Image (cartoon, rainbow, N blue to C red; front, top):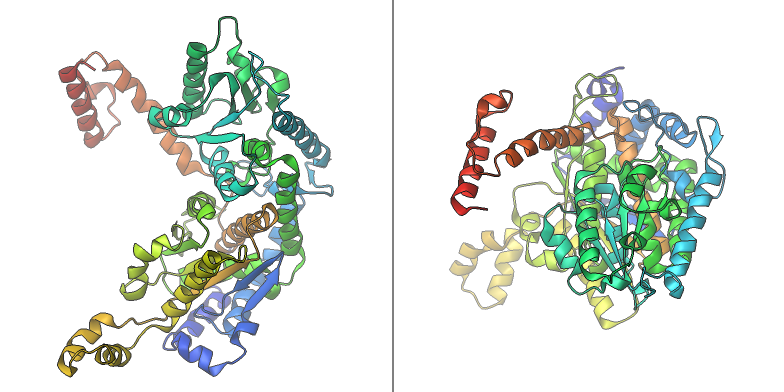
Length: 554
């Protein structure tokens, strides 16, 4: 495989950057009155405005040629055909089948019947909870659901449940617990009635350390509070392929929902992993979310690159990361209920594309995933937006703006979002700052002294995603958009976006260190000779922990 940075298409983009670099975004808008029309796209109820990015139509053409040269269309077709594009695990990555209404095949087998069967099982449970028919062992209807999972078994449904909170049945409490720190589970359970609480244990293998620890703690909580003779197992549902593991916790086969092997965790919220969300908003609304994602899938697979929302978003990200040198991407949703979206996208993009080797095992020769960060607007305006305005780092931004219902508050929120993107692009010159200071009553000398501190260089690139309203359907389209963006970038960089072996390495180290910590629970001295492969820092920290425990008797 030709090194990416040595290809003629990459070199053409590098030369193009040199000619475009001196031009300010203000100048680009002044030179092209139709810039917004040329550099914005509509589809799946979304408006994607990328006219405030440091690009011109020629940049789009060059990026599209790069995508062609990297055989992007072929990669998309192979994914949709159910081929094992996750090469290091020899698995398909067919999350689009989870929201499909047409056949998709993996290994020659149509998986749609399996997908529909799981959806039907989810509907039965969600309907039973919604109607009050699903009860705990004491006969009390379920009034609270606590999801126990981590990573892809937590972030997706947690984010979506908050995003769609207005669609949740008022009588139902929804909680999510991921951290092995007991504080999170204790906080989630504090005001719940054990007799009406249902736990959903989400773990494909039913071996995830954090999830099983929380499940066992939940079982102990139920045992302490339920009546004599009540069955704690009746308060559990499992999303797992390990029926034996679920049975060991007292969960019956009828309360186990399977997960497909051809879907990675961070792409799985459309599967049974979305069960807590389906119970919260109802299965009809959950299927509306699937329909929104499905519409984005069909658009992604059919639209030409220059008219394709996920492809264009991915290519702009490559331009910013690899040609403008941006090391991060800020995601700022102007909707309080989308406050967890940046955290969700952190996993989606950084776990997918935080890779340093290509598919053939050779090192990459360019930067891959940027750091994803952000928080809900307008709160961020009073925190980190200062860095955008006057800092020294180039920080591309995705503004996500639901129009919402017509109200003064909604208008103010949208106005803030649009003002931020405009002001970050336009900036404020020293001369403009000096004139404003004089108009505000400052003397000529004081205005001249203060003007550099008030000036903003502008030229900060951003994209704006407008939604008519935050609904299950528009949320589905939005999340599928970012999923496809991550895959496109991985294909162009030549990496595998569907494995996460670095994460597995960290888990293995934790499994190695834990026995040493347990062995020292009685305060005995740490023995470095027992673990010669560990570094001096880890030995020193373990010895300090044991000494503290010995001193406190804990």
